[in-house]
Image 1: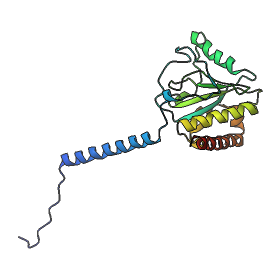
Image 2: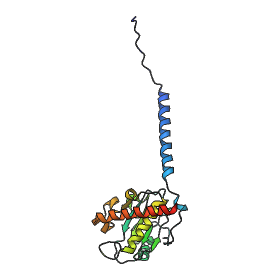
Image 3: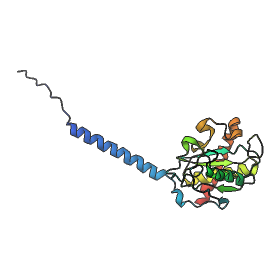
Image 4: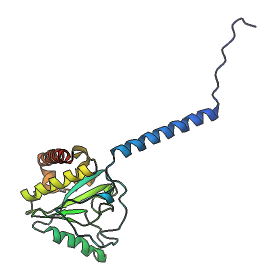
Length: 221
C-alpha cells in the first residue's frame, strides 16, 4: 500500500445540489420582484388625470375597447391619426363606430390629442387599447391630430403632447429616452409620419419631454 493516500473526490449529494439551485432561483426571483416593486409607478386605477384631460370612454366592445386588463405600463407609444384636419372628437367617434364590427377593424387609443390641444381619454389606463400591435399589453397609446399631410403637429398640439407624455412618465416612472417610442419603432409603420421622416424632430421631442418631466418632478417635491 502506498504511503501516500489518494485524496478522495468529494461527491456532492444530488439532493443538496438541487436544494442550492432552488434557493438560488428563489433568491433571484425575490430580487427581481423587489426591483420591480421599487421602480414601479402607482397602480393605474389610483392615477388622477390632469385637469386638461376629458374622459370620453368608448363603450366596451371587442373591436375598440375589449376591456382587457393592462397589467403593467412599460412605455408610451406616440401615433398620428393620419387624417389631416380632423378633431380629437372625430377620431374618438371613429373608434366608437368600430364597435359595430361592420368594418372588421380593430383600433383605438388611450388618448387622442386634438388640434387645439384638447385631450380625450378613450380607454382607461387600466385597460389595453388596440393601437400598438405587440406592445398593446404594456404601453399607453397617444394618437395625435395634425393640420396637414406632413403629419407635423401644430405648436399647441405639440406642447400638449409633450406635457401629457411627461406626466405619464412621472406617474409611471418611465424614462423618456428609453420608454417613449413611435408606432414605427414597433412595426415599421410610418407613424407618426413627420417624426419618422425627420428623426431630428423626434429627438427634439424626446428632449422636450425630458425637460418637462424635470419640471414636473421639481413641482412634486
